[in-house]
Image 1 (cartoon, rainbow, N blue to C red):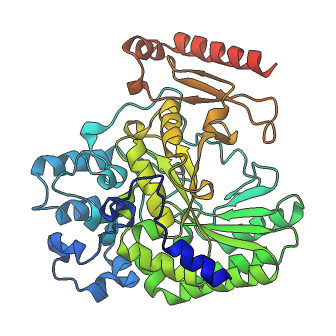
Image 2: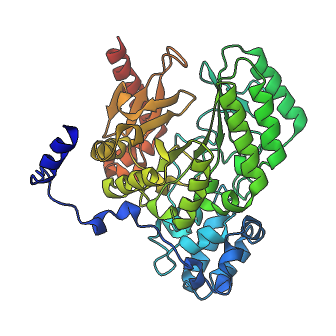
Image 3: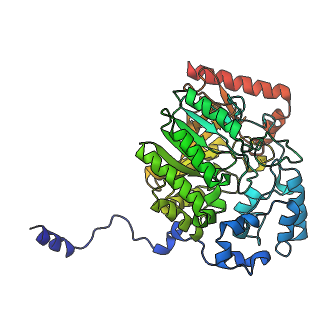
Length: 462
């Protein structure tokens, strides 16, 4: 009976409510592959085996401005090199760029390339910082009961076991600590230290309300395999801990580590599997900002994690001229889903020293979110958030109590985090009117705009 029914259906014409889709338009499935690094003179003779080796990538990662500029000789104009040299001099982050990342940048159009914009500052594009900017704008150190551990949310803490990364993003919100000192910033020291780690463990174990620990830094990629095991085992042994997240930019900037650093991946896998047996969740959180950061190498690395049952979630930072259009953000979200990464958050860019040129407005985030939603499944659609300056934590970008698009001030509350307080985010000045920019140049006018915004927010809260 069932077979007959199926046969009848197979002879009927298929009804389609939507026009057929040309497979060539599904660009989220089209990943860069082949020897794309060959156009860089320094890597033109490097074999695929070498390029896929994480040890080779680490050894040849560029950590000096002079070496980076030397690698760009013949690819860009002398004027660009001079511009970048001055840009690094004014940057809060030191340089660290992997060969993989360097190879993905379009050096035929470096000023407009979205990857160059994130990692190689040029002085000609820099803008003055917002007058309300502070180095540790999220007040992570103020919420730290012991060095390198931030306890802000009721049941979650941020653990910073290390202060280095496989590459350094110039927009890093933790530029107060990550990397070495620069001309602009003297860093707080969070180097790997067992005694400091023990103090963090003691605090975590003493707080029964803590259930969720983010292991970040710096970057979990820069923890040795043994350290991944030690941290994971220590936290899994605590009855109060139910969830754990290892946070790393690594898959976006050096996916080779997942393919060839077998000890590191095995250590992570062992912690994930032990957590599963204990009915505890251990996942990997990563950080892709642009669709071009996802290549065939990325997919191979993420497939390996998928095969091992490791859940991967992504957190994106919304950045001007990088991903601040509905088209680019939709492509990124779809491509992440294609390689089995769950888009989790899109952050409205924090107020970070030296990168005002990268920030966008809350209004931009709202516009993009509206266009992204519905493009794919809800569980693969990220939440757009403002990490409220002053320590209010992540707030849904839509959830402001008051938003004045003219002054660029949005006001948020965080009843479950810090009840009774008001947290202000400030849109970048270059996106405001000339008259408003002049107001921001006056301390008296600044106070007036802020006081008015808070008063308006209080009216709504009542």
